[in-house]
Length: 452
Image (cartoon, rainbow, N blue to C red):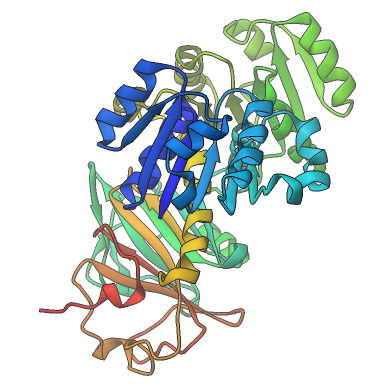
């Protein structure tokens, strides 16, 4: 697809990287010469220096033949106006980054006039992701398929787990309702077969329904309970959105924020939350406010360095699930060495969400990828496909399909019925099929077949 991205900041760059990796023809637009040149050169894409909310600039960027415009500047007003100009220039689909909740609440009134296909708020998106992780406090990562009917959940196997030192074929998986689909060990990733032996410290990802997953984790001695008492460090937009979601689900929320004016505003906006004015880096304050006994703590301050340092400290004094918001992905190597379990990159999440929308657009143009998640530090992909009538995988037992070595079919959703397939199962038209693979670039379900 031909896609124009207005704005070459962190969000625009994250979106460009995500969509370029999936093979789209990208043009980026920004008023800053260096930002345009650096991004265009690093990805080998076209860059236009200019105001992306101006008609002539959009025409120069190829609006007349573009399939989609994504407005991702730091200004909501510019993003919305760019979408309006894009519609005038003939672009049918537009996406705007909109951070102001007051604008978000009113967008439905003018969505059609703006030609707006989707509005995305990076802070709100990050808050939703964190709330999902806190729902299963023992989970390192949760990804949903089939509109939440089935999930892939990653956990660490403790020393006292009943599945330690046992082969997969020997593990009770609740009558086939759970599947262990990937294992991380010593910086290596495996898509295991029945002979694979699970060991203490392994990070396993399972696929199942959420309620079934909870039963399985209890059976294998993995603590996975919901976070009832949560402390949020920093009172910014992510904390606000997250607190609203958590309070609605019955969670006790405490927010620690340094700025007195912001504390007063949060107290008005979130009367059910406890708001503490103080320095989030003050270790004595954290202990006095119950960090040792909290179920979940999210470091959501403005500076990555502070979020990293305080998360490292909290790991030494608390058994809580600790989540750190990090904007700069260049810190990832450092974080891996210090084994911080849960890292949220709001900018990258925005790119992933938009990429999912683009895949949905593509489905009308021949691709049948419905959902894609990159797991295990981008080394594994989990993809959900919608099966079309006439596909060469239909009606053949899975054991008779010549499937590539590093691909595994892990789930079939047949009109709401979840099947974790065995060799004798067959794929039918209109099934939603989830596969996991260490190969990149699958765009059709038929790509799982070995052609050699």
